[in-house]
View 1 (cartoon, rainbow, N blue to C red):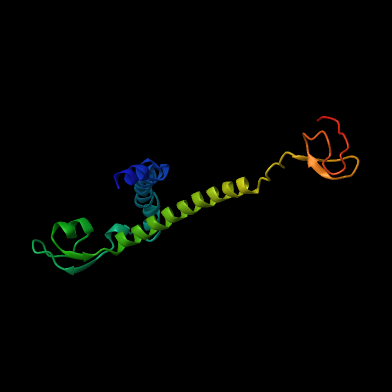
View 2: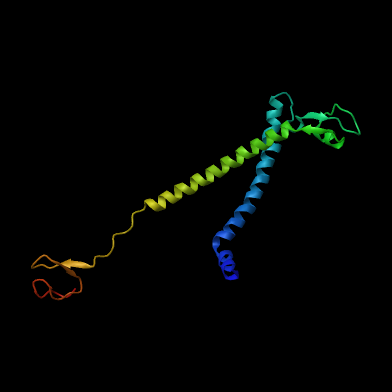
Length: 155
């Protein structure tokens, strides 16, 4: 079993997977920042200065300070139980951006793969020649035709 595990680990696929997971996590952080810091502020401004992270519903008031709470951070600091719709909207947008980016990468990879597959293979080197006397196919190095026994020029 140890030998099989060593073979599994030594394959390139495991390393490729590990690199993909690490890069995916880093890309997720970039997508999250893109949504939270670049896309959502102008969208919130267009919608009347709404900060999507502060769209929430208080289910239960906090024990320390009673609402209303102007921000989600204040509600959470007061111990209020909230449903965070704005955070959920941000997460959906992050998912869509990430999925679209992955779609573009896969599409590009498939296009390169199709180009590699579409390239025709070179024709194989001929291994036979035609006897000039009887038109029988014979091996190229043959000096005599096995069918008509004619002597042939050396190749």
